[in-house]
Image (cartoon, rainbow, N blue to C red):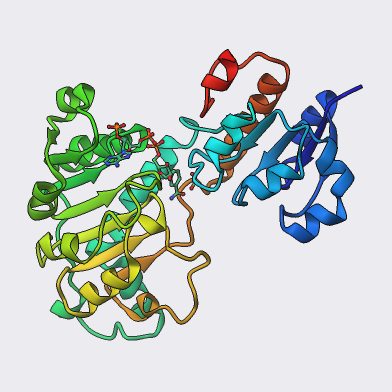
Length: 325
Ligand SMILES: NC(=O)C1=CN([C@@H]2O[C@H](COP(=O)(O)OP(=O)(O)OC[C@H]3O[C@@H](n4cnc5c(N)ncnc54)[C@H](OP(=O)(O)O)[C@@H]3O)[C@@H](O)[C@H]2O)C=CC1
Ligand SMILES: O=CC(=O)O
C-alpha cells in the first residue's frame, strides 16, 4: 500500500501526478482546525504532508500520529514547530538554493524602486501629473557606489552582495553570527557589529530567518542608529522588524524610506500607515514569486518528500538529527 500524504497547496498537474505515483494523496485547502476535523481520518493516517504558509504546531501533530515527513514549499520554516517535529522523529524538508537568485533580484528591486521612488513617480505619471519638465520633487537618491549593509550573509545575502558589489559598485558591510570568507574574498565585504552596520550603511538590507533571536532585532533603538538618509529593506520575515517602531521612525523622518516584501501581519492590513507613505515600497511577499522559481520550488518540495518517505534524504533537511536516530 502507498503511504498517505496530505497535500495542502495546489501544485502544477505534472508534479501532482508525480506525487500520485508514490503516494495516496488527500488534497485539502488548508490546515485549519475545521479542515483537520472534516478530514480527521486522512490526517490520522497521513505519513507525509506537503504545502506552505500554514502553521504546523503540536496541536496539529497530535492529530497526525502516523506522520513521518513534512515538506515545505519555502526555504523559511518559522511556521513549523521544529523541536516538536524532531521529538517525534518527523523529518522536515525545505527548498533552499532554487529560489536564491530570484529573491536577490526582488531585494535589488526594492533597493532601486525605493531609492529612485519608481512606484511613487510612476503613479504620478498615471494620474496625469507629468505636464512639464520634472522638478526636484520627482528626484530620487543614487544607489550605485553607496554602502550596502546586509544583515544575514547566507545564500540570499551572498546573491544580493554579488549584485550590489559587482553590478553597482557598492561597498558591502555585513552582519551575521559567523564570518563568511567567500563574501569577504569575492565582494570585499566587511564583517561588523549590527550597530556599526546600522550607523554606516546607506541601505540596510535584512535577509534573516525569523527566530527567537531575530524577532524585533530592528526596533526603535536600532532605527535611531541609522543615518537619516538611509533606507531599510526587509526581505526576510516581517517580525524581524518592530513595525510600529518603523512606522514611527518613518513618520518622524528619522530614516529616508523603506522597501518591504514582508510584514508582521500578512496580508498587510489595508489601514496600515505604511500604505499612506510615498517613501515606502510595499510588496506582497513576492520574493520568490516568478513562474520559473515557484515551479522549481514545488518540484524540489515534491522530490524532498519522496526522498524523505523512501529513506533517501541527501539534502534540504532542516532537522537531519532525526535521520540518525
Ligand atoms: N521575501 C521572501 O519571499 C523570502 C524570504 N526568505 C527569508 O530569507 C531567509 C534567509 O534565507 P537564506 O539566505 O536562504 O538562509 P540562510 O540560512 O542561507 O542565511 C541566513 C543568514 O542569517 C544569519 N542569521 C541567522 N540568525 C542570525 C542572528 N541571530 N543574527 C545575525 N545573523 C543571523 C545567518 O548567519 P550565519 O551565516 O552566521 O549562520 C545566515 O547568514 C529565510 O529564512 C526566509 O525567512 C527566503 C526566501 C524568500
Ligand atoms: O518566504 C519565502 C520562503 O521561501 O521562505
